[in-house]
Length: 167
Image 1: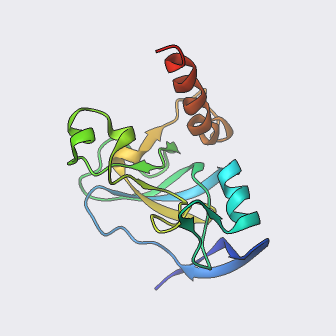
Image 2: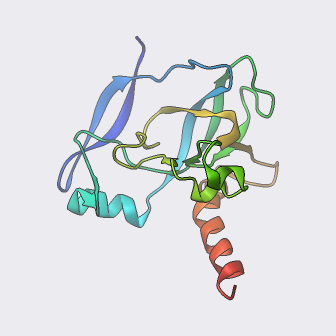
């Protein structure tokens, strides 16, 4: 299997660049992404300093990171929204699409939500490559940089919070 580098937490306040297996496309709607930019969230810092947030405890080694952008390296046969060479922003939340919340159109409160870079859920994007479903890949327009693409996830949380703070 092909290898790549990933920056992984190895213990409290410990990180190491490790060689790991490069992820592979295994489903028709998978997208292989060459990571370009990764933001460091407060949760990443907390995992680094404390090894956990509440019941989410790191099993070392673990790759953090959920604020990211990259370039599509390859795509499954059913992918139509993006193509190799496209710059994209990554939505880190992966809903089940089947629970009561998802069926009500509230995928952000999915009862089985899997989140990129959260212990026990999914390895993060602080690595050379990741694989995400097509629905998590958002093409960046010509006027949006990879840096801005990586910032779209934390920005969207702030915008959502502001829009819903009085409701």
